[in-house]
Image (cartoon, rainbow, N blue to C red; front, side, top):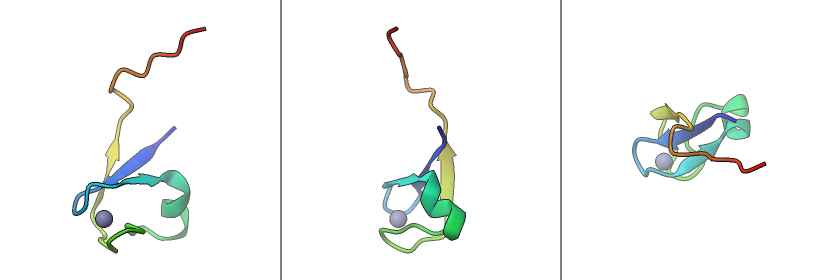
Length: 45
Ligand SMILES: [Zn+2]
């Protein structure tokens, strides 16, 4: 699952928003960066 983060307001932006328009739905900034799910995403099975 990909997710983006706004460089301006630091809100997390879902991938579905980016499909329509590359823009932050919160503040309208156009500078987003991808956040990798490196932050310990542990799924216990
Ligand atoms: Zn923003």
